Length: 416
Image 1: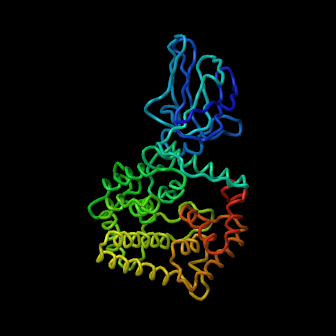
Image 2: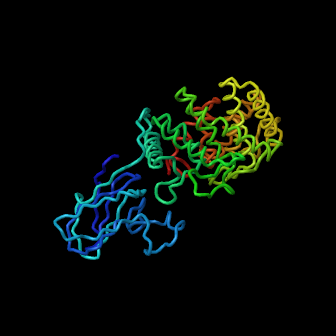
Image 3: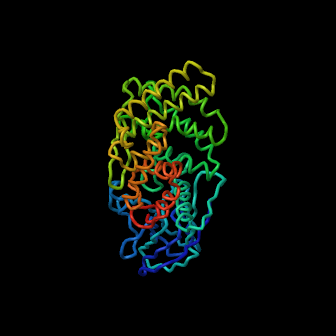
């Protein structure tokens, strides 16, 4: 928990005040205020302001019902007792916010001392830091850390305001970022226990974990629910701790076996795909099959680690079969282009080692050329954000990766 004081306070009118805490965060606010008995005060927590400088929920209100004030969202309601001072802080909710618009049904005189914000998240001690001469990269690092922490309330979530759901794909994309910066092993150990609880006997996992039952029929292909393999494997890589892999081994095996039974060719279109790309759409089948390959490969490596020889041989063969099927369908070995040669298609192949060694430099060249054609800006969705910079920097184009990461115009991390 970190305490934040307002960086500014604006009086809109006699009944309305706007606090700015200067930091997007997850958490709550605490109000200490005097006023007439029965006065109703509303504290609306938002992440942005509209053109008039008022609280704006248009980035999220299309996703919840009702949209009027009959069931106010991210809003605390305080009815004053009329005593010397009322002191209120919610104990059973949290919000995602930077601004708080305070309204009252009686004229109210407020100061910066009346409201305090608390940035709250799971307890994960910092272990890493980036300090660059490039301020855009520094700000991107700070923003990604704030985003990671704001989405860590007992388990990784997709957003701290609207859903607060444990979307699996979001979490495995961010696992390395999280572990390079924070000691988060206990959070993931708990969350993978949730995975084991949610897995059906046939191996299927829901797209969000924990789940009340939603997500078993949609959005839960290998590109998302590969958390069952990717997260325990990364815990092993970062900590040298095999316990989580051991606990999840049978679950990974049931999951991989289910996909293999349903898609015996090694090619699967089960999943969400490269979610919300800038403009170019990578075939869902390509990315889902790639994550099927990743899962099978992790399972084979884990089997070897635990001395399970027959499983190691079986799943090594399966992984090679999947990779061969992907390359047969999507790789043009003459040109070194995967699919249509999009940033996600090429970077996914390079990062996840789908590319035959003799074609690696050609595929990397094609990726660099594509990025330059895109004016050194990203043209990827969620899955491609993980691979684009790694694929460039690990294959001789580190300077180009740096230039992409440093952009400040749309579409880029710096613009965002």
